[in-house]
Image 1 (tube, rainbow, N blue to C red):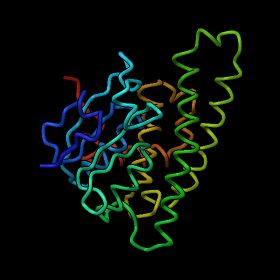
Image 2: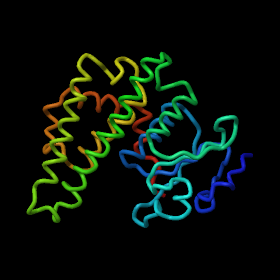
Image 3: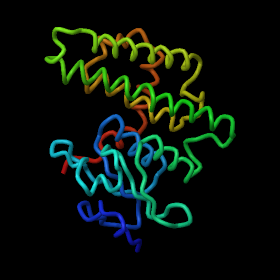
Image 4: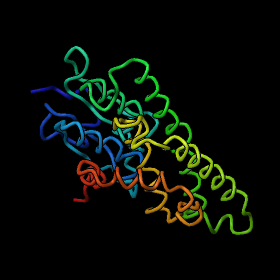
Length: 235
């Protein structure tokens, strides 16, 4: 049995089975990236729900695994050279899981780097911009009621990014063509989150991006996505 005692987070969220991947997360657009990937890859894992309501992501135990205090994070007891490894940042975790299994990422080097470019496009663009749009549009609407600039700024940037995706998906089923990859898993949960969680579909003019929306729906139809979008479940 693996010894995870060197990870302080396990003192607050003990592993029932320390021999499998430990996931610390919440069903947010960032969090579900990892649960969807784990489901797609068929990896055995144990999910621990990190409550934002009580700021558990800021607790000393969680910060010991992710100094940035953000979900998701994982511990893999069977990391490189068979040693346990803790990882944070959803993009880094997706890359790690793909490379660990040799799945959800092209074997061809050139296509692999192209896939990583689209992962970084999400990490540096779609995630931050959609997140800021959602913050001002839904959660801080009262604070910017007399100043439309924040919503307009992030709305326009989110729509620009949707335009990039729309062009990329011309003639393609997935971002890398016929091959479903971590680039898709990283990205479509954010587009769906802005529609479902932020209620921003009309403001972001989703109807003007039919290829994007068809791609999102293809992703959501996958059994692994349907399961992963609900993990970690409420107890």
